[in-house]
Image: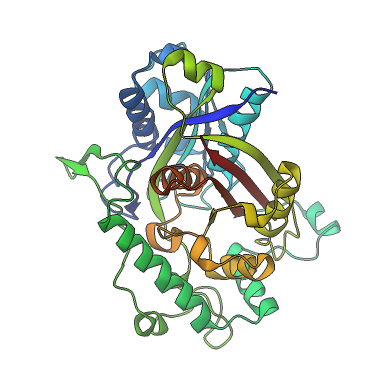
Length: 382
């Protein structure tokens, strides 16, 4: 089996809803990481054998196969193919996993994988969320993700204050990491237009690093009536616009092109779980990817568990016993936001750069997914 390596990994800043990217077309946003990868790694786009891009709402301006359109808009010509996939919130990570599998199987040597979501211009759910009546022959209920998060909190007995503490930590960690320059090598500035004026977007717009427990305690619940739930906007992921992409290659191709890899992709996993509670997938996905890699939790140095909702991360922590100090060390989606199709690629981008910065060895990323799935990836610094 061939070895798949991460040569480079970048993302755009994440713009808040109706923020600095509100006038930016999703195809232009999707192209930005591709342009950055080309500039940073000095390759002829013709060497890229495929582009795999995740997008959760592939309609309207994000329709017509944004995986193909992104390299075209990036100026890569007509010879670079591309495909868009949708594994809901896990789409960007699945794009990377599919690219890695392609390399491992010997089908391709150089690919770009990532994802995009412009949640301002193509809002979540605008592609429709109905199911056929036949669904109810097999499942008792159809729930939304917020309700799934509330049920997880109930099942584990998490209090609102416990989850708010996690949220405050996420915001604080993002602020400290940003100020310390931990994001400098992965977040690329984006030149765009806003209200007819040329601007440069350089920083995530959603974080509030000054957030405290008192502020969060005053927020209204988002998914249930007061007194009957624990989740609100402050301990749930932010709605943002952004994209991320990784340059994936075989070890041999990296050497041929003079690229120094950041990490190798050790193993990947995807699982299905109860679609009603819905968001427990990171737990069995973590177990599965470790088993496939013949590794133990203790061999992993860093973790990213997507902060779709605070209860998802809290449940994963309780089931695995991993220290919170190893998880989401530079802040998570509660702080910087969750651009659905792009988040998974962004999490692996964070881990690859953090392993390099800290000279640690191994990392694992995992995400919950709508309708009850989970995805996981293990990488190792090289």
